[in-house]
Length: 151
Image (cartoon, rainbow, N blue to C red; front, side):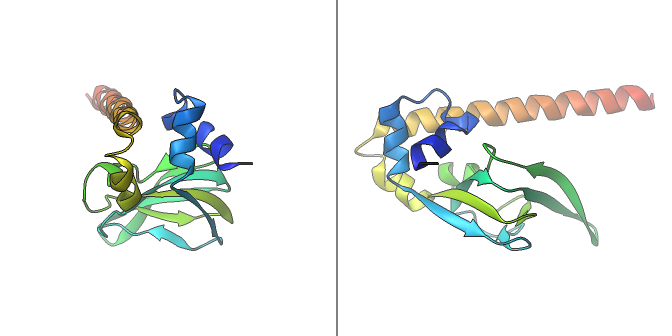
């Protein structure tokens, strides 16, 4: 699978033209991660986003003294995307559940291309914002459903 095809498999890049995909393929790097290896840890500074090309990534969060699995991500799914938009700490941890092939886009490279490719960077920022809004709406609906069942 080419870098462009791997990007195209992600929902974040679904609406991108081939030119847009090529812009981000030029700054994406391929990363092989063995099973059990961390991609990032909760509370560390986020510096890049990832797209799962193959394999499974487990997303976890610390709750008191235990670790809780929040999600399993597979091919085409993305994680860590907020790190492209702002310097912040990771809210969760991500560990390769199985051997994984990933695409990584570093914040420094995203910022580096912004002056030359502002439309492509804005389009990605808007895609990240739309994805976040969708996830927040799902979370809100789940909370409302949970609250409704306990009343």
